[in-house]
Image 1 (cartoon, rainbow, N blue to C red):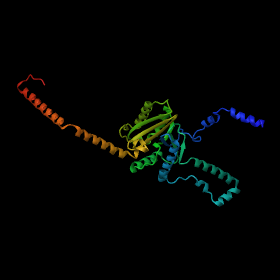
Image 2 (image 1 turned 30 degrees about the vertical axis):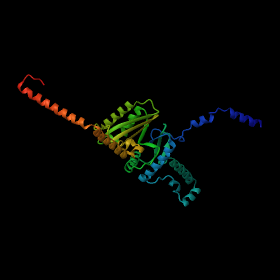
Image 3 (image 1 turned 180 degrees about the vertical axis):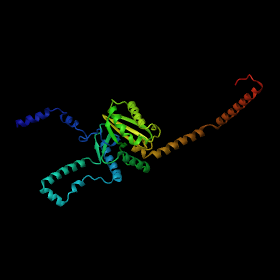
Length: 323
C-alpha cells in the first residue's frame, strides 16, 4: 500500500510538459520528411493540412489511374502458387527467399504511388511520387479543370509539380541545375522563360542571387533562350523550404493561373465579368459626358485651326516671321 502511494506521488511530481515534450519531438508524418533527391507535388492550402492531404490523395488517385492505370501494390504477395508455397515450407533456402520477398513487398507497399511527407512549412503539403512524371500529371489535371470548369477541391490552393530537389545552397543548386535544365533549354532546345521564387523557413538564400545565377545557367545552355515575363513558354519554379530546394519547369503557368486550382476553374467567367464591367464603365463615361461640352471642344478646335491657317498664311509677305 505504501509502495502504491509512493508511486502515485512520484507521478504527480512529474513535470507537466514531460509527455508533451516527447510528442513534440516526433514528426507529424511518422518520420517521413522532405529531403534532397525526392520528386513529387508541392501543394499549398489554407490552414487545414489534414483535409488537404485527403483531397490530394483523391484527386491524384483519380487522374493517376487515368494516365497510368490502377495502382498495383499487393500483387507480389499473390505471385506464389499453392504448390510453390508447399515446396517452400520444405525447402529452407526457398523459405528464406520467400521471407526476403515478403519484406521487399512490404517495403514497396510503403513506397506507394503517392505518399505524403513532412514538408517543413505550415500550410504546405508535399506528396512524394513513385513511377510517374509529376509535371505531366499536374498539367493534365489543370488542363482538364481549365476546360471543364469543374471544381474538384475545397482547401487545396496551388499544386506545383516538383521534378527535382537538391540542397538549398547556391553551389549545390548551380551544379544540379546545369543538368536539370537540359531537357528544356540545352541546344537545340530553346524557349522563353521566367523564374518564380519562393522561400519558406529559410533566411540564408538571396532571391536576387538565385534568379540571377539560374537565369545565367539557362542562357549558357543556349543563347537563344530569352526572358519573357508576360507569357513565357516555360516557368522555372523555385520553392525553397528550410534546406531543400524544389525545382520544376512548367508550361502554361499564366494560362492556368499560377497553377491555382481555385482560380483555374473560374478564369473565363472572371474575364467575361471584367470585360463587361470595363465596357459598362466606358459606356457610362460617354453617356455622362455633356454634349454641350463636346460641342464646345469641337468649336474651340475649329477656331484654333482657323487661327492657325491665318497665321500660316501671313508669312508669305513677311520673311522675318519666326514660327
